[in-house]
Length: 66
Image (cartoon, rainbow, N blue to C red; front, side, top):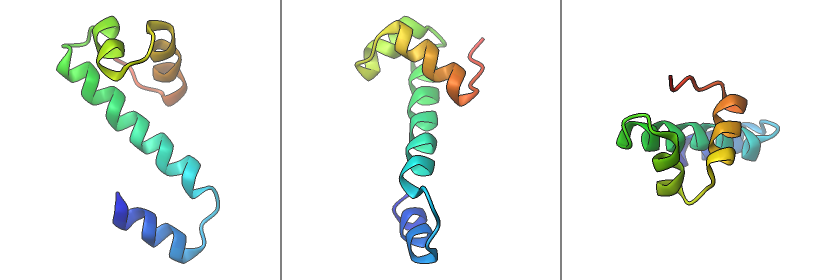
């Protein structure tokens, strides 16, 4: 991810922070869901966020955990 960030910044891409934050959130959410065998409440707890937050983020990021 560091190299990707450097590459994007060197190329002068717009919205690098938003793009990489979105990618990182997808990785974290999917990893937490995998670790909790798809249980949203447990995944949210592992990430230190609430169940409503994880549900909203999954929807925003287009992650289908069901």
